[in-house]
Image (cartoon, rainbow, N blue to C red):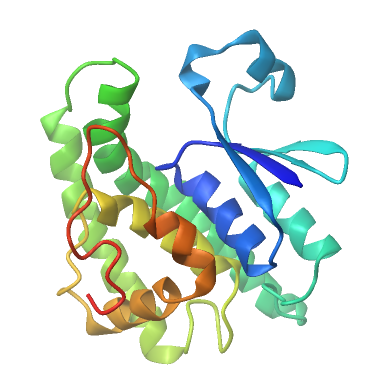
Length: 221
């Protein structure tokens, strides 16, 4: 069985979990206190980051590389389109959420509200929280624009781009930082992806000291 060293409210770990679940790959989840930089974990990944996946006799790090490996070795069901231009768009959007969205939103809201407390780094920076709350509106509007032109974020089929976006938004939804009333298109998209069997374990996550809102696991939120 595969083994994933992860943190429940890490969007990068969640993206890998969604890919594994969509491909019906059984995985053992091992919570990793990566901030303690223990020797055993650093041997698994000298970068000291999660996720780390043990699969096919290998240890893998970096969520984008892991997801592409899973896609290449388990192509069914496909999470990447066949045409190069369409694959380019998927990779662009994965990068958008894992880089731009993460920098402007996730790190300003989730990390300030949750990670600082869990890792003992003090209290949230109110300026960062304010900036993150402002930035997420722009990103939801951009997603809404994409969904006005496409069935899914990157095109006519669900791809890794949708999982990357959903991973970040699900973490933020756990702490009630997503205004689902801002865009009906984005809310409908999230309801659709949230109802997939691959999402079940994520909706069951519980983080000590943080209780999700009542709608978090509700498929008809």
